[in-house]
Length: 225
Ligand code: ADE
Image 1 (tube, rainbow, N blue to C red):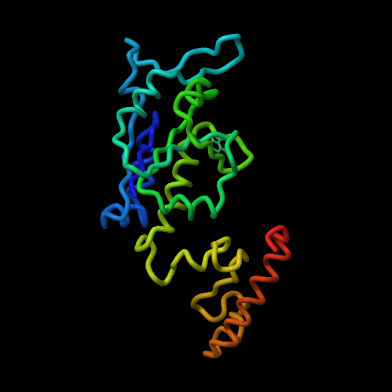
Image 2: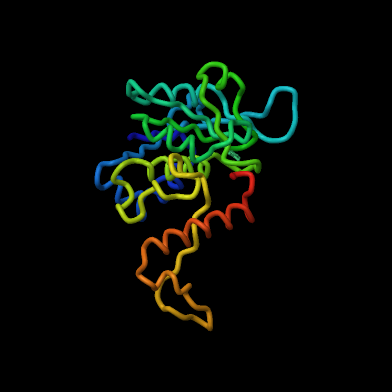
């Protein structure tokens, strides 16, 4: 899986991908993360990539030329998805992450400032994705959310023990929230690990976990049931 991120802030993407599970996945060749900076493609002599909107209002708008040229510089695989990160897009869910994990290449376009010149949408026809109903200052965090959540559904990215299969929201299981987890010590500040988890009785443990998952889902997210 190859991710190509069109961003004015390459370091944000590179920084996150240089740690922990993302780093390991890259080192093992399971994913590749490239960045492309529209500023390297602008024909403006002052290297500008944005301009004030026609018709007035505050803020700046990302211009077509640097974005079109940055997009066109990216080598495309035969099976790629082109995504624009925007609060106006379809809501990103675990189902989308699983679906995207089957692609060979994902190209992510991060906005900044007030937004994109509309002709970027008209001309490049991206799929538009929002990570939630709130507005961020740029598309880099949403792009990283997509990269992270898609990657952990690629075989080999997570160790066997923490396989994505058993996640809250995971498809094919049951869409319930996860049960609580406990680790050493058995008692901390008077709070004890539930007896059943220490019993060694795997059937009982599974029963307890399922019942906790149902309780949690109904009290926190009854919309999932
Ligand atoms: N850019 C700014 N806010 C965003 C959001 N919520 N989702 C995706 N891209 C964004």
